Amino acid sequence: MHHRLSISRGACLKFGLFAALVAASVACRKPEPEPAPPPAQPAPLTAEKPVEQPAAPPPAPTSQNPYTTEPAPTFDADHPWLGPGWGKLSLQDTLPICAFAGFNEREAALHIEQVKKQSLKADSTVVFGVYGPGCLNKECDARANLQCWVDLEGDTLHVHTRFSSFHKDGSTCTKDCLEVDAACETPALKAGKYTVQHGEKSYKLQIPSLVRQPCFDSK
View 1 (cartoon, rainbow, N blue to C red):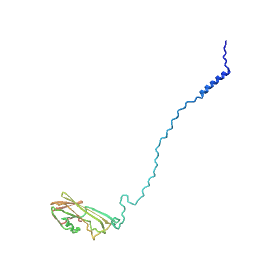
View 2: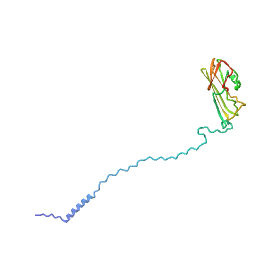
View 3: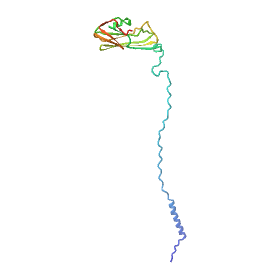
View 4: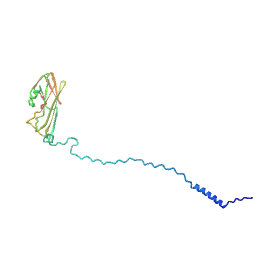
């Protein structure tokens, strides 16, 4: 006996509808959300290029000599020797010197032509007098300065002289000479032979003695 399975049309429709709903529910399932991308990183900072400053303009040229800090000389009615036409004269250990028995004898000879023979004694000092170069006159010379000092080293007398002045260019004066002189004294000298050293020249001096020509470097 054969049994026949009969399914009504309505049941078949219901089954088909159920299958469609299941498929729809599977198809409409919300997909898993994708992970969010990492936040954007800011661009690395870069050093700003410094703004170039315009080069400083070169200093304006001046009329002053770049090799000296002294201004160019200008004429001064009160100090004409500081202006053009005058030069500075300086002498070291080259002036004429004379040996005197004391300051009184030195003061008696204001000019080298007035120097007389000198009697030098033992255990006494010797005074060296120094004279300026030639005739000094305010028309030819200005601000004359004369110095003298002496050092004793053993039996050697080191005599030092120094002269400076402003001299008018090309001028020569022979009258109304100024009395510019200086003197320096030695320690007390014992009897014996001494050497007078003045610059590059040396002279002999005997103590005690009568010095008939007491001047050195007089020419």
